[in-house]
Image 1 (tube, one colour):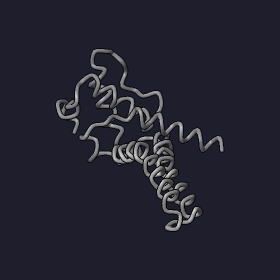
Image 2 (cartoon, one colour; image 1 turned 135 degrees about the vertical axis):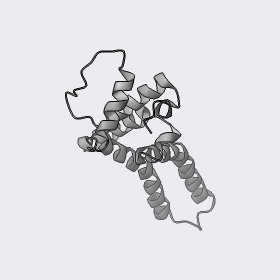
Image 3 (cartoon, rainbow, N blue to C red; image 1 turned 90 degrees about the horizontal axis):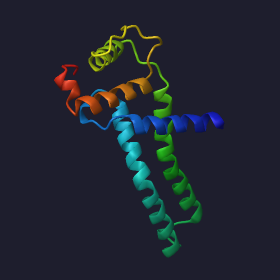
Length: 149
């Protein structure tokens, strides 16, 4: 059980780190999952309260067992998104994304004289940190301005 909650916490960190940029929507599924997870975190409590109040005011319409099942299902939606993001954040970047990752890193660190050799293979969480840093430094059009998209 501890492993499950650590993955969900990792997904929450990844959700907070992943940049909210429209240019990333067509490149990564992570942007869409992050958007829908944020949306479900905001909207699901309202739906749960609506279902419970509907059951209180109209008890003949919906059974309590059905209400409990629906509430548990709705509570699982944001958790599922966070779990998916947590699993994704610990995955290594595929070989197709490594040159793109290195190119963004070089654009950000052109003032620093670092070697381009990576000590370890980057993960999606490292990519999220890099993209967040890139958009913070270069603005919303960082990828277009540096011809990386």
